Image 1 (spheres, rainbow over the protein chains, first blue to last red):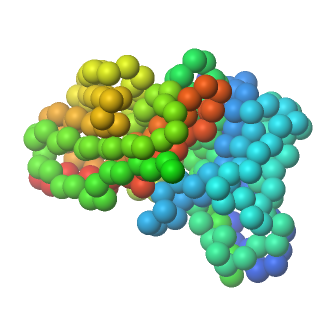
Image 2 (cartoon, one colour):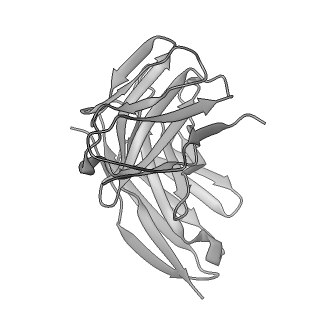
Amino acid sequence: DAEITQSPRHKITETGRQVTLACHQTWNHNNMFWYRQDLGHGLRLIHYSYGVQDTNKGEVSDGYSVSRSNTEDLPLTLESAASSQTSVYFCASSEFSGGNTEAFFGQGTRLTVV
Amino acid sequence: GQNIDQPTEMTATEGAIVQINCTYQTSGFNGLFWYQQHAGEAPTFLSYNVLDGLEEKGRFSSFLSRSKGYSYLLLKELQMKDSASYLCAVTGAGNNRKLIWGLGTSLAVNP
């Protein structure tokens, strides 16, 4: 069965370190998204990609970067981790087919910056 | 601007019916989604509406009125496992494949 997986599931890192969160999907979807979810803020879009070599900034992109070198993967990098980046991160993928862009989510990565 | 509003919290009794409302103001519209998210888990797809009217899927139904910018999710025969957060999301027009998310409604089902 096709799936979308994130790793690691939990991560503790120190302020100032570079951290990369992995996202791998086997749906062969063109669209991939990274969100963070915090109490009181809901799901906020960090970066997204509509295909290989395409990346775009979302509403909360500062301090984050992504690259899309193949269809399956969209790693999210925190250039210099800050305590404000402590959050739960979700990766999602979808295939645009008319209007129904149902998104499939990974299990989430809980990141703590100390 | 773009905005999606949902109630923050709701409570209901096992076996009852509950309606969760969602209103939206977005620049363009290409469909409305409802997702369910249990605590500590990822959101999972429940329903999609692009035309006005009611879509029924088992115990869950979703309604859309595009002219009013309004949707609701109806949950019947509530079960304890329905305790979760319910997220409303809208896609923009054309090739805009991003979802605009509401903050979610936390539903507690009591025995």
